[in-house]
Image (cartoon, rainbow, N blue to C red):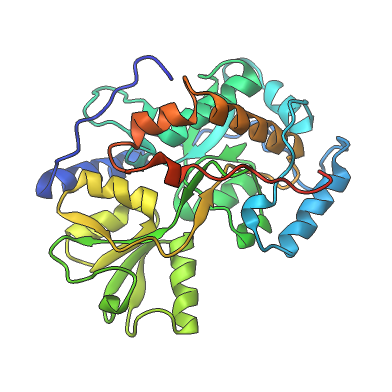
Length: 352
């Protein structure tokens, strides 16, 4: 997609090498992507100050749909190329500030990360980064007109609500709870929660072999909320310890390498990338949920949601430089079948 992007030769690392890579990425997350002061209301403005763009009734239907949520991946708006108040505010930024501001991860291997082998000021790259560039090209006419901000897992929703970013493209699962706080695009990736543990471990999956084990999850993640609910409902193995949570999911891999936890639970797509970083760990058992990643935006940013949905339709249909191309570029070495990851044909809110 973008010239100058480098592939890494990290598959096959193990032990100390993998830990070094994880630690480097964790440090980079704190140092290489400093927060930039926010100018303007590019995220669509506050709910009370939203302009009347003709989609008021639709936004109301979004809110009702979220309250009655059963299929969260279907609670989004019909695609459109029309401009609106949110897009107008983004385009009104002047000079070097005329960029789409996107919350991303920068330490998730093959999704959003900096290649430590490239030297100098390594550019962000990965599957999510490709999508962010694609959206920037559609909105601003330049795929490089994008400013990335590193957002910890538990800060994705607050960053949108506070107007620090226009959107979040960060392996973010669409779910009913989050729909109460943000709006989502149509799904762009299908995954599910899965267990990651050392190859030498006797853990076999999301089953009784987890009894008495300590599991690491990211704070604010779907993994944590799922495990907590399963524990409350008696579906989780007895004695599982969920107290270890971290700001960024990669930190769980470090905890696992240090022997501080017995297993990690996260999206299978992320777990596969972590297993590629460190061949001493592996996925255990099958995914035990079905989930979808979406682009998250402000609740009142209807025009931006519609525009992103149009971009996603075009990205899926583009065989030369679209979804399939990015999958082959970043994920094919760690995931076996793109058909399992491509979400079904999007369904949109009726009357939207």
